[in-house]
Image (cartoon, rainbow, N blue to C red):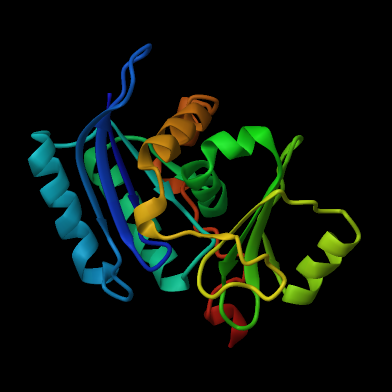
Length: 223
């Protein structure tokens, strides 16, 4: 099965084409990672075309994308492109929570060992936040620094591993790891995403089922 993965929900474009076979490791056919703030609207489709051309396939059998939270425009571009291609090619599409995917991509080994906190800079003085404990992943939240600090101070969240994007949050230790496009392991993200995809019902992954995870709503909601 040939799989196309892409993500523009943050300040980067990532496009990956890989082959998945039961009992065999993923085989990467092509990969493109670039930090491109505000450029995904006109670069993504071209990157996908080039990735498929390099992989020497006309179309994949499955599309996997991150569906948010993240940049409003980035989420819209990712989800709209995935839905359009899924409909055009008549293939399934599967959306992953961005924070969950990034935690698996930056700390797969550490995830199994301890607890982890990820805060994506959501602008407007808030963070898109996810906590991983021995019981699994929390929901993704849109929280103020004060709300996050309160959870830490009351030991509701007790992270051993700290991850973030943007500037280092004031309540984070200096040793925290900054997530960037170049330190995300796409193999780990794709392996985890495929595992989650295979848990779903096949008829639940058509283009109509892929929805953006804005959390904050849309600009229309605030007008």
